[in-house]
Amino acid sequence: MIPGRQAAANSAASIMSPHGRLVAALVVVLALLQLCMLPTICMAAVQYDYGDALMRSLLYFEGQRSGKLPTQQRVTWRGNSGLSDGNSAGVCTSLQEFLSTH
Image 1 (tube, helix red, strand yellow):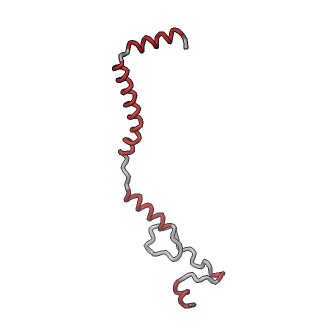
Image 2 (cartoon, rainbow, N blue to C red):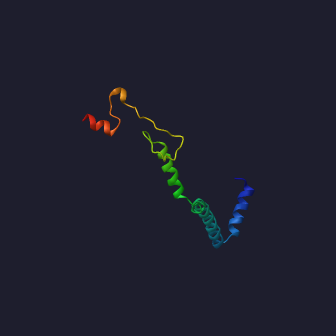
């Protein structure tokens, strides 16, 4: 350390009383605690719309359905699919077909 700086540091430390050093340390600790709490405080202000999230989730799963779809299907771009899957291998694809063969 540079001798002049050491002398300045020693004189600053000697000027500040023990009570002043304690107050300064507490201010630093409180400032750090506030910085740590900032994300928690900001996240508490965020409001989640769980009803909207549930509606979007159900809409997603309705779009993933396969087979003969109901006429009131909300995902209008999705049509019937997989109606003849397994026919070439002799797999039963409907309950009615399964019951008629067993």
